[in-house]
Each structure stands twice: as structure tokens, then as C-alpha cells.
Image 1 (cartoon, rainbow, N blue to C red):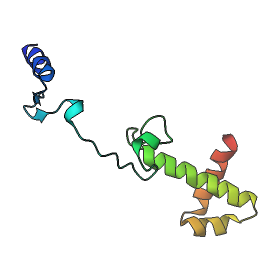
Image 2 (image 1 turned 30 degrees about the horizontal axis):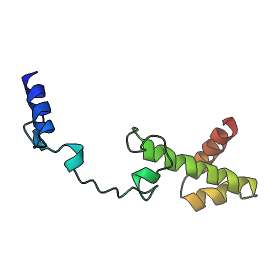
Image 3 (image 1 turned 45 degrees about the vertical axis):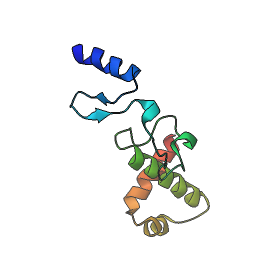
Image 4 (image 1 turned 60 degrees about the vertical axis):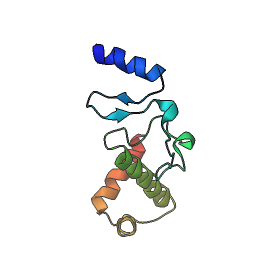
Length: 106
């Protein structure tokens, strides 16, 4: 409790804070954050997701697989064969069947 009161007092003065690990921590107004984005958006402020994909366990992998499955379905509807799709995406024919089945259920 004493540490919290001390931190608040220091923050009001605009001084460095000390976090629970004894490391220096700046108040937000003194911290310069570079918003460099990620693979999916040029910056965090322009992100299409409501929550950061990297905050979810397996978030990026799930999203990439979902995109892949949609592309598989699109190509299958256009007339591509299962074997051709498997070669194209470098996955097994069974995985193609699973992707198509998941797409049917959605």
C-alpha cells in the first residue's frame, strides 16, 4: 500500500515511477510508443480486429487457417480437385476434406 501511495505522489510530480519489480516506469505522457503495426495492419490504430490477434492464444494461427480454409472453399467451388488443392496448399487431401467440412458447417 505504501508503494502505491508513493507511486501516485511521484506520478503527479512527473517523475519516474518504480514498478513492483524495482524497475523504472514512465507515466504514459512521457513514454514514446512507436506504433509499427503487425502482419495484418500497418498500425494498431488501423487494425481490423476488435482485440489484438496476438493477445489470443493461437490467435494468429487460427486466423491464418481460417483464411486458408476460405480460399480452399472458393477454389473448390470454382472446380478445383481435392488432389490439386492439396498440392497447391502443401497439405494432405484429408486436411482439404476437413477444411471443406468446416466451411459447410459455418
